[in-house]
Image (cartoon, rainbow, N blue to C red; front, side):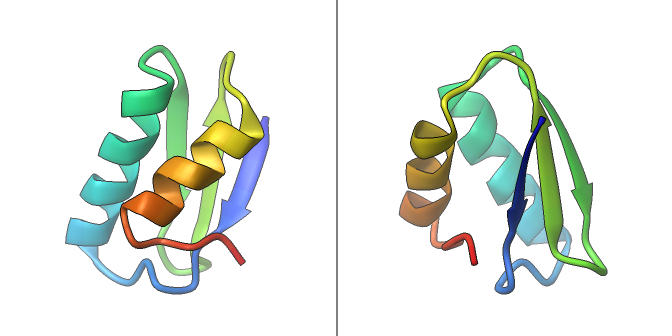
Length: 63
């Protein structure tokens, strides 16, 4: 399981954008998001660096 903290993820739109960005890199990954704590967990075969790049490209730099 890979976990990220995304301080700029603040609303439902953000959740959708983050999920889409992660699943573009790892389509089979399971994405779980806890919006109040700004935590994202990704389970499945994925490279942490590739996921972090996808998040940054979508405007959500991992802290």
